[in-house]
Length: 143
Image (cartoon, rainbow, N blue to C red; front, top):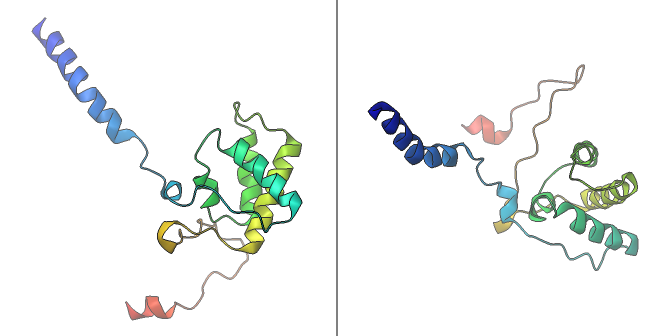
């Protein structure tokens, strides 16, 4: 009986600590800007931004997609993945409008992260048949 009591006490005291260690670390993109000034954007893209802000902020901070450095092709794949979520509630037409905004924004420039720093580019898998070796950068050679 005492072993059971000890096990219950340990589970009650260590359970929250173990759970706290297994949670994901904060996403660096959440620390950047939380909105965009789109007043200089074309009217259609201003409307698309409003839809983007409404739909995307339901599941995560708006800072996360604003500070992500995906190219247009990566955004397309990411949106397809989001549309499969059961709580997405975004039509395909709305997804096209959101993609149009994200693609337009990609064409302008990558999103800055707080402090003017930029996140590293997303990892890319090598393309079969593409050149695999490139000369080392001067920075890498200096190491």
